[in-house]
Length: 378
Ligand code: GDP
Ligand code: MN
Image (tube, rainbow, N blue to C red; front, side, top):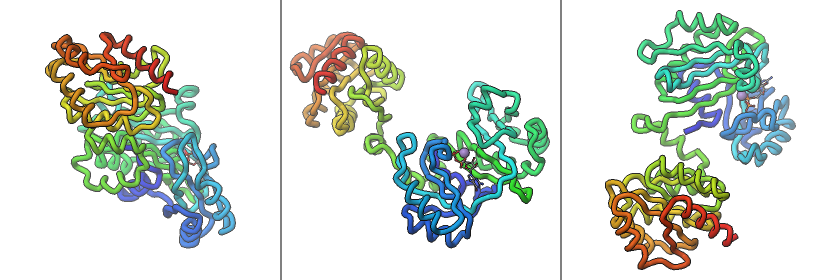
């Protein structure tokens, strides 16, 4: 789960990381009230889960109430790379002497943490990594040993940033580990004109697998403006990711679901989603999956791709038939059933086939038919 900048900063503040005094605002009036309390100058910042807000006009300095009003009304409702701004973060403006970059993330191949630090912050860090990799000081941290003060000092020296950053970086590491984050990133980490090191931006991704030990994440969830389809699927316990195509995809197993999306692309179509119903294919799970797909207005055809393993083909087929009787489906369905007892399964489906429900023996044929049906329905 990705956090908004203000949520990331609130998390940082709990670990003693210096951030500016600020407040959220959902209206121009709230922005004004926040600025009056904080004192001028302030920065008006779009809260969207996408980077590069500054370049897109989503970060503006305001020296008085008039400018707050002006910037708040222009940023609220602004579309930043497809994310419409519904919330602002107003904070006291910092006087910047220098901008750096700092992050902790996972190095999955090394099974360790990776720290990255650079004196060249504020800009697109991917560009720095590509053009001047020597400007990015990397350390791998053994999760058992943790980040020692000695290693932290070495790292700071290698990056060529002020020694004052040590305290902040140690706290950032503590926050990263303790909060079960996959990523904490500060860009820019700044040196203020009066010599303090300070987090000016915050990007935090929490590890969803650690949810069970973080009751405090509950309130973060409510704020997240999720794709309504994804919310619906999550409520039903399905592994679903919304995409922007027209072929609804249902498969059992994450690998098969990905392969199904790929093959839809391969034959010239676009999947409307990724959906893994997991092992087995009980009538109830299938009905839930069909319901989520059916509620998506952009879906024009549905591709059910099931490989029977432990769950036998006839059970899968019976599950699909039962599910179809529970949900009133508005798009044509193409089924590819393979694996254990596939023949028996297809035999069952035969009794229900029509121009709205077709069965195809291979993935590629099924994908082609699903894409044709989606095209025909446009
Ligand atoms: P991003 O573009 O989404 O990464 O948003 P940031 O929070 O990183 O802000 C973008 C840029 O705005 C920063 O790199 C700064 O140059 C500038 N900025 C943000 N906050 C302040 C501030 O308090 N004072 C000044 N002078 N500039 C700021
Ligand atoms: Mn930034």
